[in-house]
Amino acid sequence: MADQWTAKLETYLDGEFSANEMRDLDAHVRSCPDCAADVLSRLQLKRAIHSAGKRYSPNAEFRERIRKSIAAKPERSLARLWLGASAALALLFIAMFVAISARQQQLQRQQTFSELADLHVATLASANPVDVISTDRHTVKPWFQGKLPFTFNLPELQNSEFTLVGGRVAYLGQAPGAELIYQIRKHQISVFIFQGRAVGRDLGSNSQLQKELSFNLETWSQEGLRYFVVGDASSADIAALAGMLKKAP
Image (tube, rainbow, N blue to C red; front, side, top):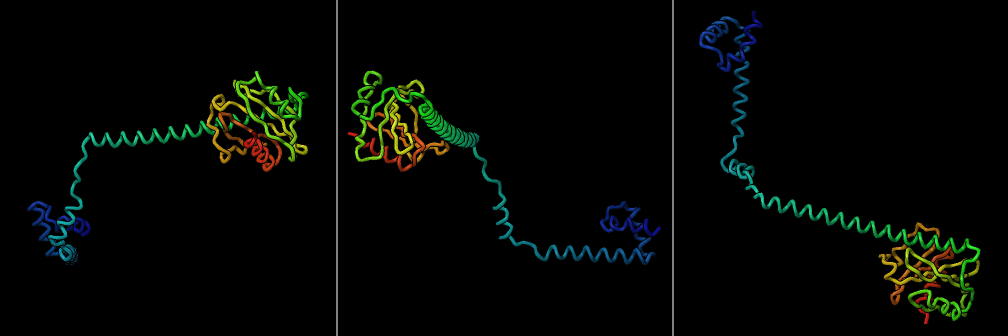
């Protein structure tokens, strides 16, 4: 029976019983020392909690500061929200466009350099690598007249290690151009010359060359023409031949 009364003490202290139940519990507490001690202990705990709660009661200044910090911010208008979302979406599309364009340019450069490497390999593997055989630039250059829609200059090779082997007409896509074969020691180098507008690709500069190829390569634009120097010779030899072509009279 004591447990039955003990279970009701918390509700009794909160005054949540009916008047008849409260009278019965009052009578029981007065006659039961254990329940009376339990009620006293519970009352003391409630008073301690109540006092502690009032001990740190915030002042008016603190309440006002808290009220301002949690006050509802004025909602943005629907038009401003749409404007912000549209601007973010536009920036996202611009970033995606730039990334896709950069990737396409990179793929175009890789494709161009791979095609040139294939042409160079095909020339090396051919039983007849050139259509005009001569070490004289004054013989090789005129041979291309009427075969190409442009003309070009070739360097004088005296006092250099390079030897002109000859030339042939090559195609990069649908664009016709000249392929000149030079030899240095035991290495052969292909020099491709095309019209710049015929190549029609953003190939960048030497600093952007693709190094995945098994050949060294140097490329540049000059007087409307696009030059490519490709070969398994050292990068120093490739650069030296490129320098001579750039200065050709």
